[in-house]
Image (cartoon, rainbow, N blue to C red):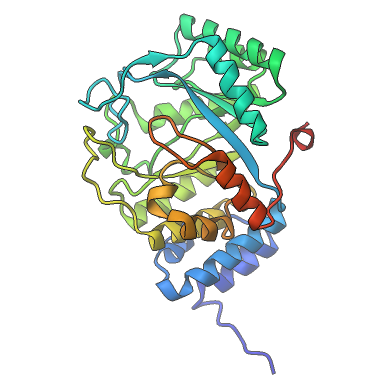
Length: 338
């Protein structure tokens, strides 16, 4: 005789029906319950998240490299970021030239990556930056086959149209955190301004890439709020970063998130975003380590940034590719993307 599961008492049993079977995003109240699961249920959560990923996204993992085209000197005050000109953080202002950008794109493609993201530390792009990005993309396309994404801050409608004309297929603009916590993280622009850019990106036909950073002092309730707010935007991709506190920033002394809380978040975000690319990004090395990184990959993650991040070191790209091979997780090829 089979054991009857009480759906009124078990959030994972309910999620198995609504998320796994029907593909419905988990609502905020249920996301919170997942984030509050005891440690002995994390394994069950990650198994369910893996099943959801396999059913609604498939087995392939998308690999991406990112490059900082313009580093440091940013006028904004994002409290986690050492690129802000407002903080005494040790980041030197620098710009790449076009040959360096092409070299980075070619090295990224050699790892098996299908995606190369050009990032600039700015409030939003000016005419000079837009011209440089166009020249850079043209040079990359002449040398290597790889999809180009950009992350250039707040956009105007004309700039969004121009990026489409350049062939940019995906635009990253992170919400960073829940709407209720955002004023504790950034004061020089609003959460609503970020949403407006994301809506503009979707309107002009670029894929929306939007995630944030966990472990910046937000409550568990705000973490659930954040996941639900991301789901409302229906993003194509959500990068999951974990705070790696940077010297000289206001968040320099914030304790890093525990591996258990990080894994609960990975599982919860997968259940909140069953059909979305969920990408490992910055801070996983510090927060999860090698063992936790494996658990997350088997618990709903289906994309990885390889190599270094904007101002912090990541793993060697070959190490991540070898890990994916070990876990028998196939890497999406460029021909699959086409």
